[in-house]
Amino acid sequence: MIPFNRTCKQVAAILIAREDRRLGRSDWFALRIHLAMCEACPGFERQILLMRAGLRNWRNYRDVDESSS
Amino acid sequence: MPNFEQQIIALRDYLLRFAKLQLRNDAWAEDAVSETVLAALSKPHSFDNRSQLKTWLVGILKHKIIDAMRLHSRDMSSSDSSPDEQSDPLDDMYFRAGDHFAQAPAEWGNPQEQVSTQQFFIILEACADKLPPTQGRLFLMREWLELSCEEICKDLNVTPTNLYVQLHRARLRLRECLELNWFIKARA
Image (cartoon, rainbow over all chains, first blue to last red; front, side, top):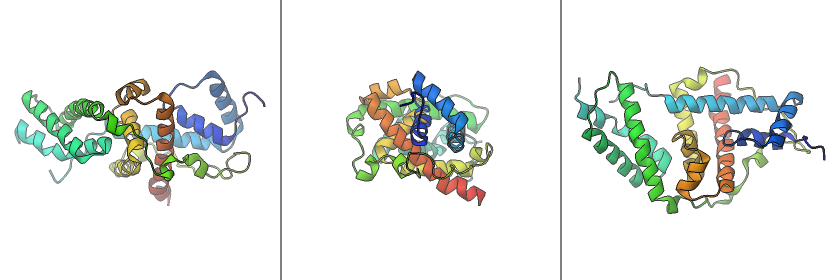
């Protein structure tokens, strides 16, 4: 097996894992290589990053002025 | 201008919404909010605006919720039991033989401002609420309580491996729910 070869499915799992823990060296390299070469996975990465941004906005959001109260 | 006490009490429902989302148990959530309100009333502060007051109250609530989670950890750490909840959502995604995307993931566009609207937050909360209870709690411990994985493992006495599996499932489910209920609709 080629050391840094990963399937899209494995890369999707790595991109999800990255939200919660530091990647090991080999996953980190494999991710960079795969993202540089794959057409589909950068789109998945953008989704995950946008979700991260959305969650951060949500957590910090306070200005709802509920008209009912 | 309502007085301090009235302002706090008016925000009870706001706090309860988060407490229920995180604890997934109405009685525990009510208790955590009551303790928060009592703690707040015992140390009056003045705030320039409602947003600051909310931030302060949410800060107190988070501490009360963490206490509640430790207290009830035994009831919480059990895994979600239905087979559907045990499955890996990645297996439901569309991969070709050889595990490559059969279809490029949808472009969600570049809607940075789109994910900071109140409508988005409503969908996000609904999607988080739809997660199976254990996955939902662990996910929100990361994303709302902002605890590290180490802290979560310690507080709930779960193994890192189990935690990562649950978070993996939760994040993929949330992704799917947001895609169906927000990003695709927003583009339509």
